[in-house]
Length: 125
Image 1 (cartoon, one colour):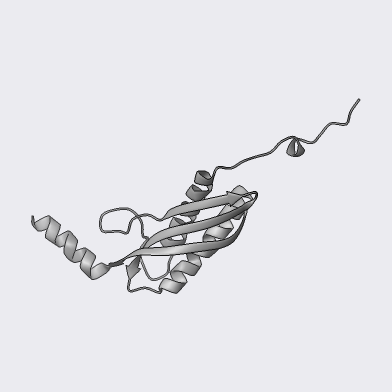
Image 2 (tube, rainbow, N blue to C red):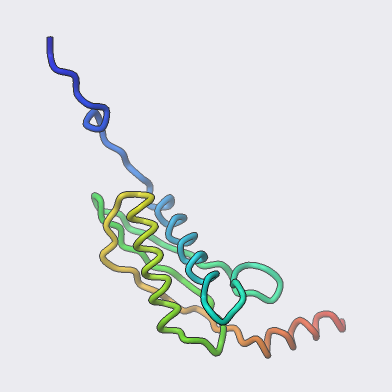
């Protein structure tokens, strides 16, 4: 009788790029929500749009690009570093993939002063 093959060795698992992109986008939201010195960012009235991620997976390696909107003024380099660390950690933990690079596009900066003036102007109309 042939030896039984352990379950982990019986087949392959493929995780779609869009699934890894959702993990990366959620990780970026988590990283931005815990930034010291500021309220959580994300979708909502007066807040920045939630991060978007695009991912290319080749074997067990994920290349990630995250698009962000950040508050101004803020330490943009530190915000990006925190996003990179969290994206790498979550994709490795959740999907078991190596993440050699996380490219970040800062698409827009939101000023609290400008945002509060825009909200006030909308309320007056």
